[in-house]
Image (spheres, rainbow, N blue to C red):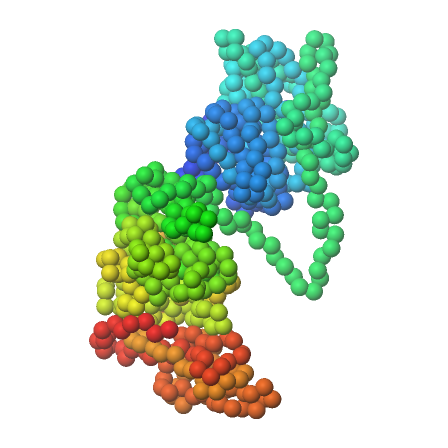
Length: 617
């Protein structure tokens, strides 16, 4: 309609940008965002408006520095939970609810639900929002072009007619009229438009008005004006002029970023993350066993599996994420934190779930980000009874505590897999290369190992109480990936693991690769070791290990020294043969008999592999 009409645009279903969340739970129709070059996922916009349609519980994207307004348009009551259910709020129909974007938030619904979702930059944008309801009425809405964008969204009734500058503009139901979408129109004079509303067959007509403003006058409202309760955002003052209802709307923002960035460190530059990196997994259900078929295809689900009972008679539960593709296919399992302080696998799983699109997945990916719950919560490698779970599988139904736990993990979770990777790291006081342990005589397992693109592959059987060994005994193709160091997150190792798992899914025809290489990009530099062993100190003292992990050492190389507390050398350690440094000690305080390095023995190229031996830790 031209700039003389304040850059006015009517869009409907055919003009909305439609998308489905990667977890398959939410269908989104974007009405507008500003600036138009910004991205919702990159969180670099000033404001964003969309409708969401969903029928199962969901999680909200974590958006630090933003504020959210949610308006339930249809469906049953919407229950919003913040901070792990520490605070809950029922969003009533046609009533705005406001909350901070950096609150961890989920919602629950009992059926089909549609909401209008407004997100805006806290402290940089003022927002006015209200719901107009009438059977047959005319309403005057104030407009401003000074750094302001307004949209009117017809959600119910019949086609509404808007009168603006002598022009009539129709807004059919499901359509939005947007004024000054790109803020290109700038006029010092405030304006108004009139809306003629009529309900369908006597029903209530409903139009939602939302106004975004970067105008300093709107942003500098007094504290009293900007702290209206969120549940009352649609209660604006009004008066009647010439028989028409005139509304005065105020910004709904309760937050301000003023003063948050007045202190800046100058010595160390810092670049903040540009993405939220979260899975948007829905709230979990609790089950006694993993029945994959009970979870709907084409969606991501979460669950707690009851394993064993604690001293209160309550269940110790493990978390499981179920990504079910739209097509049938293999079941690919991933486990992490069998040792409670080995954590790199946890964000590796999160990253995979975040980026996987279940609409393109064949089969199911079942991920358990924490197997050893008691060790995880106490920052320890071992289970509650002090035993190593990865020396205890397959466990016993009537054995001691860790045996009972391992038996429950194996029967309730692992037994449902067809393929499996177990993510580990070094233990306390040690550091690892990025390496794979597996039986390279199994063709599928061998392919998995190369596709991980590790620095080192260690050929062994794992038949010594490990989870991998127990899974293999059940006929599951299983490997162990050692992903760096304990009790920390290492982004480089996490990225390598994520890429390797994606290649494995492609190899199994479960998920097609388009964004990373389908074959290991560094295969010629991967070292295959047919065996390996640890070297130990003979004396106690202060240990200094010289070669880094993934280094090649020659027979006779000095690799470590031990000094007494007065600084005198009491022992020098030399490499007994050529080999790769698979892992090494990082703890300077050593007793006699403590570990120095894990030396992998490279397998001669072209020679047949020997039978796989048991693990050597």
